[in-house]
Image (cartoon, rainbow, N blue to C red):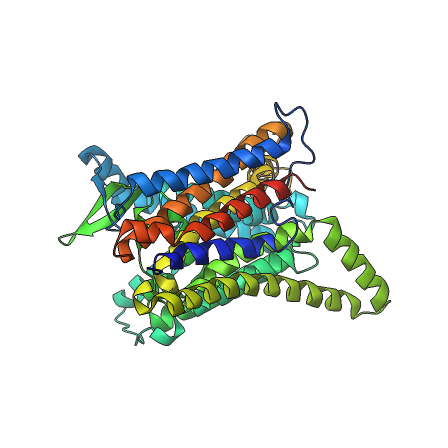
Length: 476
């Protein structure tokens, strides 16, 4: 029986694709390890042992699927239900999101042009892109309430109804899938990783406007909720990450309730939307390329390219073109190996193996832990600047919140402490992915024994991937 191999083989090969980019997790790395209690190679061996033991434990203790259904969980106590589902809390979050949006955009458009004096770059790249991802994993999809684009669209729709407007909303085309969200997310990571001055506040102001126009246009054409589910890059990104949260909401018998969710259960959701694998490839591949672009290998290559190109107004554009090609190539590699692995598994096991949509959510834990491990020091150190900038977002010498004099603490974590956290996060994420993929395998295979036998090769790939991931974290 070969059908159980599909999810794990695809998972391992997708992970291995990220390792094909040297230094994939090291751009915000450790800067050197000192005084570890045992040699570094023993940490790699220990991580491999953890995965192998986890695999064996799953074989013995997990003979049948246990994560389904995706909305499995226990309702919160009524007092907590009232708070979580309170309209007042929803309104407060919406107002906070809208105010922050207005402040960040106006700071980008009219504040100081030097990024370290302007709130916008730190807020967008640190607080929003990195910090909010961690927040939704802890608290659920709070972005759904904070989302200022959603709030503006809802307010406009409400005002339109009040004056009697009933605009025609087209059904969202199934053929589009999540492709618009792929384009928007790719555009954002391109700005962050390819453009030669991504922290330029004026550039950020234009980018925010472009994203706003695209989002509100999509909402107007296809409906607000349909666009958020499939067209809005940020909404889909944070929604996927929130599936790792232990808290969430569900609808039972027409009634919405807040629940403590069964860990990892939402990751068993089947998603056949076109482009969903590409979307997760952007999530994984962009982090991999970010690490690579900070390595000496890439820096030396770009320096040589600049020398070869010579001088001229077009040189910067040519270098950005090279960088964009490398970014897209990395993303395409992640997508390609996953897709080919699933297709090969279907050839071996037949249609009952399932397709990429059945197993693609097992990649979410890997995407999250790579982001956390990669950006950990960046979030902790640079994120502290937000406290100061929130008091003086426009660089006018204000102290609105009493934090303008805040001095960031640069030694919150030692290099060794950072290593322990990154290593633990990476291993835990891969164990979680292994659990999800195993659960999907035993759900499809006719017997646990046959499902297990088909997973040996993928276990080897997962061990290799974890060891490689830990190793590149030590590089700078």
